[in-house]
Amino acid sequence: GDPDPVQDFCVATKVGDGEAAAFPYLPCKPSSSVISDDFFFGAQAHGASTDNAMGAGVTPGNVDAFPGLNTLGLSINRVDLAPGGVNPLHTHPRSAELVHVEAGEMLVGFVSTDGTFYSKVVKAGESFVIPRGMMHFQYNVGKSAARAMTVFNSQLPGVVFAAQSLFAAKPEIPDAVLAKSFMVDVEIVKLLKSKFRQG
Ligand code: GLV
Ligand code: MN
Image 1 (cartoon, rainbow, N blue to C red):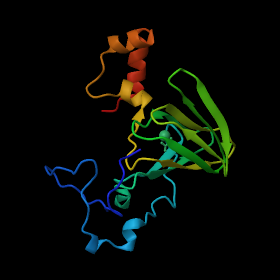
Image 2: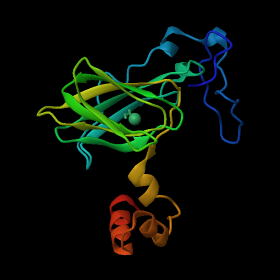
Image 3: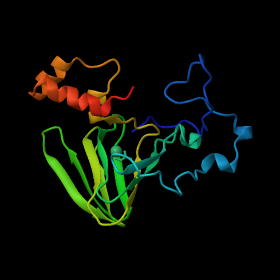
Image 4: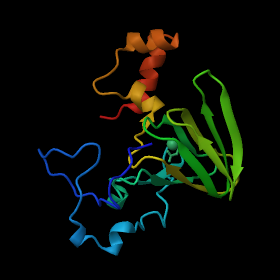
């Protein structure tokens, strides 16, 4: 997780253009102007739309959305999945993830560095943990909408989506590199790029 704090709190202030941010955290707002609402985050009372190609909506609660988390070493997302929806394969370079299902049932899985796939159908009230950096997903295997809160031991876990990072990188990863890497024809790489690249 993140480094330990050296003060009770450090509610983040926005860093202006061209201004350097403090390392490893964002600059603190003066304590004299910190109010109760700085420790409150209401944006996850409702879910994001799942009306998209993945049938998934993630409402992030990292330090960018919730500045009161700065220096506290944790954050939280809300994940909504339509029936059959998937929060597609991705990793968090800076955090483990605790998936706590609140409604419905989802298949949650990750692959470890030795190539073992660990997965479980997780139902309302149950949890599953994704170790830091492992490729993972959540997939709604139930008949109704599913919802999970995902909790991280980092204020800014970072997210690397597998398909996007390979097939939608800007500028493009050369087709030949992807074709060779996946042992497929360049045509297949072009097809995948056409699905993930926009603009
Ligand atoms: C789920 O995997 C999430 O990153 O919120
Ligand atoms: Mn995740």
